[in-house]
Length: 130
Length: 130
DNA sequence: TAACGCTGTGTAATAATATAACATTTATAA
DNA sequence: TTATAAATGTTATATTATTACACAGCGTTA
Image (cartoon, rainbow over all chains, first blue to last red; front, side, top):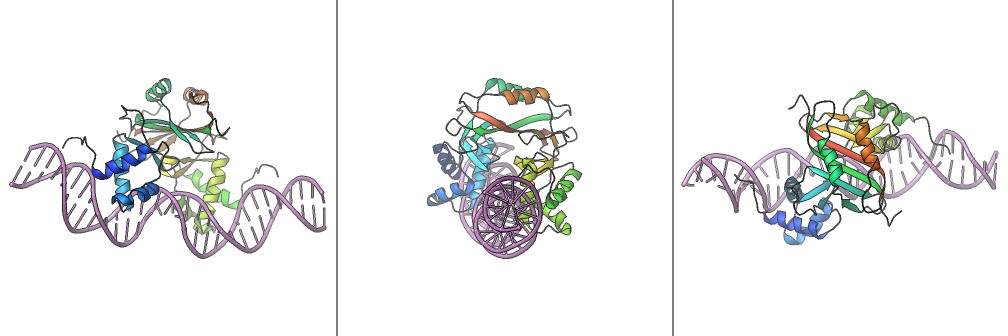
């Protein structure tokens, strides 16, 4: 079987919703919002989220248990994510910084471990909240 | 009131347990283990964990919802953490890499956000699991 | 010393996040 | 067309974390 190119109905519904928000959404808030479209159970949401994360359409903000759309149109990068998170207003922004990404991509520890993925979250106060 | 230097009974019990493990422990597994010491409820565990994280004695592995002791004897660094995580055996190691830490500490985005904390998790396969 | 603020304790209840198990359906590949 | 991988729908349950309340201990300061 080939890699699936087109999303299924549930996946589309959920991706649409996440893409309309510029901030991360939580699974059960997504569930609440898509009930009118016939998605009734948590598992239906979690399954779609899992797939969307896998193909890089969305990312999980681990420290917040929330999901945000990847704005990078070319993004197949489920594998290398950097976010800034305001600890006051909880605003989350994905960071695309070539130099930093390069640095992280090239990082080697002294254990001989080969990395294929990383997730970096910066915390602080955004301009509005300072 | 001054900053508390000494840990309370519950905090000590839980820190001891976490320090004896070289791998991250989950809250409810901690709870199970400390029941014999008179800690009966999840909240007692979560409260101690929160404090221990705050003072830098332990770190939370966000992607795993688990807690690991900080091995760095000087560690007051609840604020700057880097881990490597094996996706096969789930082995977790804290990384101390001066150059990388420096790079992350000095990172500035273009939003004027001031960071006071970051958490970086690398994923891959450890030597044993390759 | 009494009153206050702060931190921690203990307990019960509940909220929030996530997965297991099962039967069925749809899509793709051989 | 048949085998298989991927997705669906549903119910139940597991796991992770917090709210709310009553109270205890300690240091500060009035």
